[in-house]
Length: 325
Image (cartoon, rainbow, N blue to C red; front, top):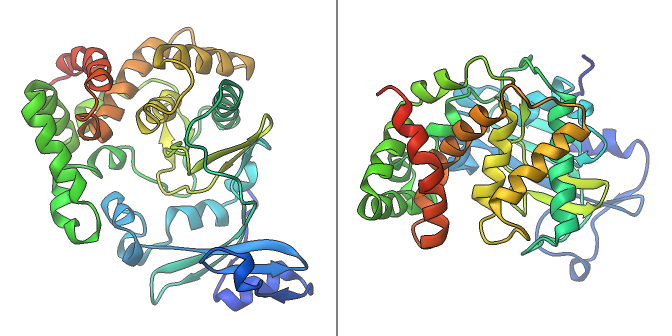
């Protein structure tokens, strides 16, 4: 698998990407705040990632002990080059500074708008592009060392909210407490898996896996047209079941989708079929486990919408009761 160069400095990275083309800063009046660049008239932006900057990375274990962040590993290992054409990561170069544990990503600034709500065509296109990603990496085995399967379920536990309260994770503590007050059984079941996800991971064993992005919230996922979705961040990427991405998409975009969750589930399954993925033997079990996993991650955020919360409770509590304690 052919990889990409990780540069030792931002200057070196920009020079390599520019390849002799003129580089300049755009006029301040023409651009929003950030680190914009024009390379021969094409817009780019520098995005910075690293544990010192991001409590989510710390909660996930991304870049632990000075190791390369998972996004950098995907770039260096060539995984991003294997994405289907319908999924655009926008990264053109990466520089890594081990002293600061911060990576600078030079990304194309396509200015894809962040939709508040999706129309049906855009929604179905995103589902199709998600399915294309999963089909491309079907039976994926992780060659670079991405997020461990359990990390996505422990990262947003109440302990993270306490540990990272000063950096914006306070909502975790409030949300988990509200869930305990409103749905004590669901809270207890979800919390036990957020502390120790081994029973959930064991239930997933034997079901097919793929490469998941793990963050299909609108904003990170930006549909551009019927054949193209920009998928910006890869910090939650790893090996998991296809339904894990679907369940996350449902949980992250509550109230913003143009059709029901049940209709979305069926539309995604149909998209997998179009991409030649047979779902007959595993779909039902993986779906119920993935929905439970999404609730472990994000159930704490559902307490302000009784209809939304009720849908998740009905779907996941029966599944959680079947897992060993």
